[in-house]
Image (cartoon, rainbow, N blue to C red):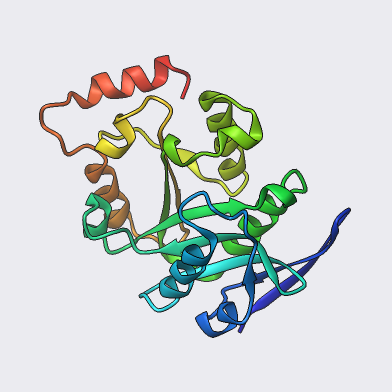
Length: 216
């Protein structure tokens, strides 16, 4: 069953909805400026595909019959180290159309998503990679944009996690954040912590020290 929240904005009523089945998404149009990851039409296809995967969930912000924002939850990619953890879900994407930003839509979608009790059974991670960030439209530099994202995800109790994951260490602005659900076992938490550092050529203590020195 789709949960719906009515959210009033200066630009009109927005409906925060989810988790949305693929058939429902297929009936809606995609805002043409939702292009952070791929062209809007292709991104809509990707959202529909996620709904067919185990634990895949899509939450959207809808104005009339148009999707103006979304977040995705899904299992990590098979090429990712996190795929090997049975209790990790990835918050894989969050995007709001430039036409609808600065209206707290992102915060509202996140809050709606994290009220789903299913997430209490998982460690939800987000891998924020700087080359996907829309710094041009926001006029923020990379680290300012990073701070905005960390504050946003912090609003749903996600915390910054040190790691030697190569996708994160590739750029100093990249960041891994995670939220541990209330029903996650201590064994699964220990496994997750052990997976944060897997590269024997990297000294975990040095990475952690650098992480703290940068104020991350």
